[in-house]
Length: 120
Image (tube, rainbow, N blue to C red; front, side):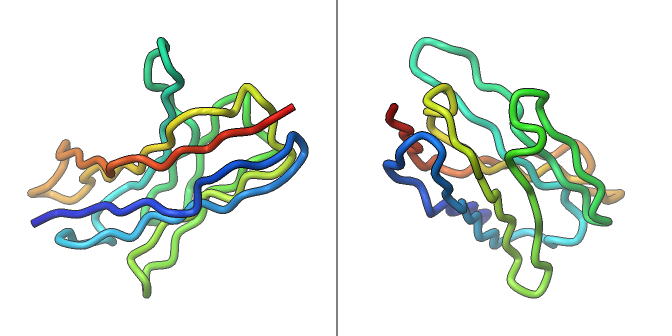
């Protein structure tokens, strides 16, 4: 059974910070690129940040310079450090695992989501 369990969401004032965590189980963590996506009510789910097993990162333009994605292989956990939060960052944030190994390439798994609300 594959599980991606997000935590760390909450309510924060604009300009504040939150750190999201996603604990993965049931996968060989080192074979998966990890990512964070978000979805606001009435909007499409969008990419926030991704990180490969080797540590290469990619960010949406809207969060560059404010958010940092990282991963801890010993803990099978990916993090999203969110600084200088803006009201437009308000969304449900979802953890994603994308297979990069020979047998799991193309496999995708999703967490249940964690709510982030940024007040003005």
